[in-house]
Length: 122
Image 1 (cartoon, one colour):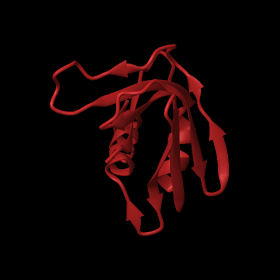
Image 2 (cartoon, helix red, strand yellow; image 1 turned 180 degrees about the horizontal axis):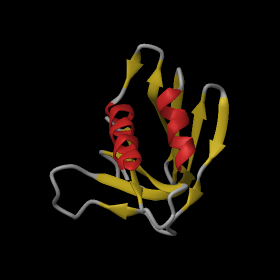
Image 3 (cartoon, helix red, strand yellow; image 1 turned 30 degrees about the horizontal axis):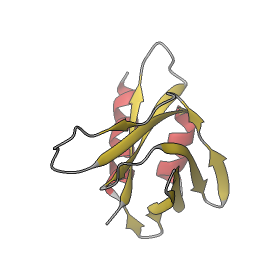
Image 4 (cartoon, helix red, strand yellow; image 1 turned 30 degrees about the vertical axis):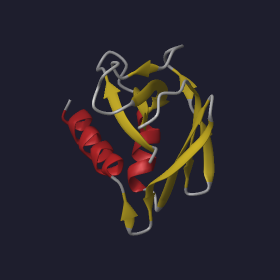
């Protein structure tokens, strides 16, 4: 089963921007784009790096990941939304998963909340 994931990185030198790390688990394919649908508004994400990173050969699980530059406020929108879906576009097609959809949430949703709490602490 292939599924998506989200993580984030932040640096105080650029406090208004973050890197949203998009992952694809159990699949080794080049990630060529990503979109977030936050409460019905679609955001095309901008590449932070030209290449997709892959898990090491022989690793227990396959993983593809790529960073995208976003405003830190966009991550705040995710954590306050009622519905956010992530679409990852690869060389093998699109993969979609909910980050949050009403009462259904994901590990990514809770990770982004913890991320923002750390950013807010400075």
